[in-house]
Image (cartoon, protein in one colour):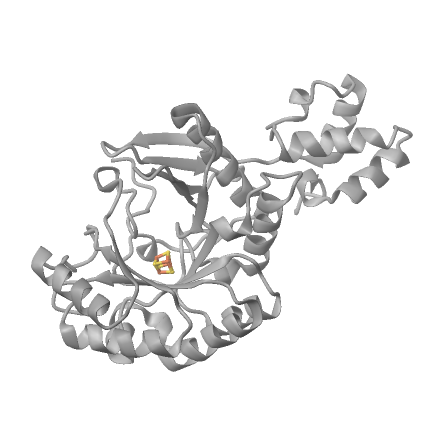
Length: 349
Ligand code: SF4
């Protein structure tokens, strides 16, 4: 039987105020409770120390307060941390903290437990999708990574990328609501301009982002610049081909004027030739994208792909730059702890 106890973090401040008044408490108590839920955030009603014991007891009887807990922490030689989070119902998701020499501290967070899109190069794609993460669970990932960042580096997170486990646009409402809470003054107060949502390419939902006039940035995991090659590595391309994605990205830009980035993992002998670069340039010119992130491939046990030789990577980069593409090579971080792009799969190492 489904529990009738509601998660208190799914209530707005106004909802909590209405409840607090309905039990004869002063309205300002609601604000105090709300701050414990989102600013601290606490893991149990008992931790709300400026609230009376009776009220804490009543809240505990009326509501649940499920939250993510850190189940396992790994630290890479390059400073990257990978956290494995355990949900209240026993599932696992992973988040990564990536410090850079330029002083950026980026959190990479998951949006689903597992993934249904089965991209061939991605460890998560070989896991079954169990469920979506709730918005408060995604918020917890960011809050916990922020706490770690403050403890280890004495700094707050500077950037957040939705590039961990799962396809964010297939968990649309929770992803948007999590960003609303992360950017709220009574949340983590982060600028939406420092948040990037990365999608494998769900054209309909990219258009929806445009209609919703979101303020964060969007990244498309392109990874191959023609339909035949993209189909080989990303089955989602069968229903969301490159033409439909180009149209959706143009619509998104028209509606929001927000930055669009292409992500492109280089795979040996698959998409690393200058002919591939030419096809990529053609797509880049049809979309108001301002950056192509070339990503070093990180081998995973389940797949047969390899990364190209260094001179091939450099030639690809040089060719893009020569043709006016703003391209950047993103070296992998946290490879030794399977925290790099495409490697998240709840492994312990
Ligand atoms: S790359 Fe992203 S969308 Fe594709 S299988 Fe992995 S987690 Fe899912």
